[in-house]
Amino acid sequence: ADTAHKICSDRVIGSIGVAVKELVENSLDAGASSITVRLKGYGLDSIEVVDNGRGVKDSDFETLAKSFHTSKLSTFSDLDSVGTFGFRGEALSSLCRVCDGMEVVTRHETSGVTVKLKYNASGELEEKIEVAGEAVGTKVTLKTLFGTLPVRRKIFQDKSQLEFAKALNLLHAYCIILEKVKFQVFHQVADGKENKKLVFTNGTSVKNNLIQVLGNKLVQNLLEINCDGSHSNFEVKGFISSCAHDSGRRVPDKQYFYLNTRPVDMPQISKAINNVYKQFNKNQFPLVVLNVTTKESDSFDVNLAPDKRSVIIRDQKMLQTLIEDLLNKLYENIPS
Ligand code: ADP
Ligand code: MG
Image (cartoon, rainbow, N blue to C red; front, side, top):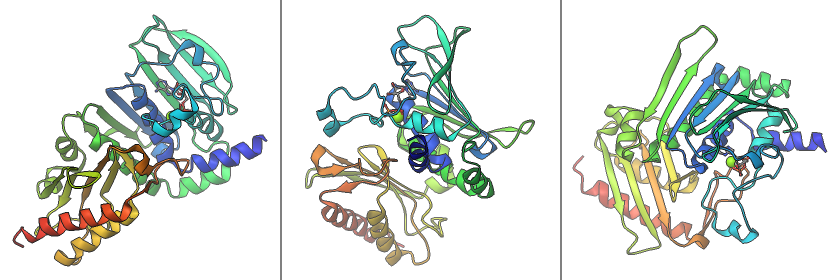
């Protein structure tokens, strides 16, 4: 059974990016307004996420990293309308199984003490000690990622920079969209090397976040997309490269899609957008930030994949046509 779970977890936590994403989503679920991510050795040596959320309750210490333990779902019918990122309770247990120990330092908002908790690979609480008082919030540290899976670790070491770039791009998606969360991301290649600050957003507006993440140069030529939901089920807002300028993208690597501000993949929408863009600017891809809002919770399903990136939209074709029309109008009105 343990092996089965290991294989299973290995699939859920299939990359450094997914590991970081799960920790960040837990911080957001805890109501954090400030999140600091510290990566070491491209995320393979350690991943640490510090937040100022409400902290972990005493009663959750034992079960925190047990399979399917979650404090977020109260009744089964809640599954239809989950407002939080997590609700399956499998992230921390899966993370424990693929790293050499997870450490949680936390102080709950109702508690006067800070505790340090250590979990083993099976997600069992092995140590609990009080530590010097810190602010309310949580710090989760994962040590030696894929340390329990030597073959997998070797594969990741061989492509560490590529996987790191992917993880960073995933983090960018969160940094960009969150208007009330301050984000900081640090990376240290190895002990004794410089601890580089890679991202800093102060969560004021999406535009400001974008400038902080991608730089002024890329952002200054973006056009705003703003389509209220009065003519359809969808409200579509965001930014896209102007076709009259150099978008700076030879590959569609800077495209961020959101459903109700939740970062998701929208491969079909991305393809449709790239096709429209191609008509106006042949050899480039647009930078895209697109938040699709829909008020009807039964019009989409984000619960398909364990990593919750994929999404099924009921009126996918309608949304696609809406966006294509929107972009065609936008670009036809801009002299090139
Ligand atoms: P899920 O997010 O699906 O509930 P996880 O395995 O990601 O499952 O987390 C398990 C539980 O641990 C959460 O339900 C929450 O109670 C607690 N938890 C994890 N991270 C944090 C955090 N940063 N702050 C407060 N509580 C946390
Ligand atoms: Mg979670």
